[in-house]
Image (cartoon, rainbow, N blue to C red; front, side, top):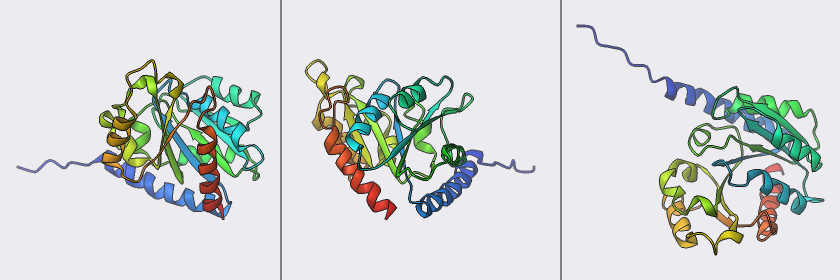
Length: 222
């Protein structure tokens, strides 16, 4: 009896995308643009964090934002209203962005004065972690109300990211959230992950995060 052929489609798709992502990183380096892939679950405060970061980065580096959503342009309008160059990416139901989608978004900016482009990815802790977008920096946002066990439940996200930012620390007195546990769980899969604690609402900790990003962006773009 003839053996059944098995083709691992996902593996093939990921390999093709990884090669494309490597090309995109070369393109960005030649243009001295740093791409940051911002990932988290829904409601963690990605947009509010970007607004707070923009103020802390003012006069230091120029930031643009690509807002990725299945539908709507609410977040992009919020960025534009705050004076941040922004475009909206609609995925048509897909739960992630890949390198080519990201490239299309970057080209749509049609400007060369940006030092940092942030891709605010789809609110999802699974799919976005699997696809390389060509970003030089990967940051995941975890909010206090989500709980300190997210790195245990979604290890790939924390394994892939350079930075974990814990947001909404102003809510720590209200929720049963342990900084020690969150750090332990995240570092179990990624000992080198950098961890910051902020409140995008009050501004606490935002300057320290901004200082770190400025140094990283300048290092990448030199």
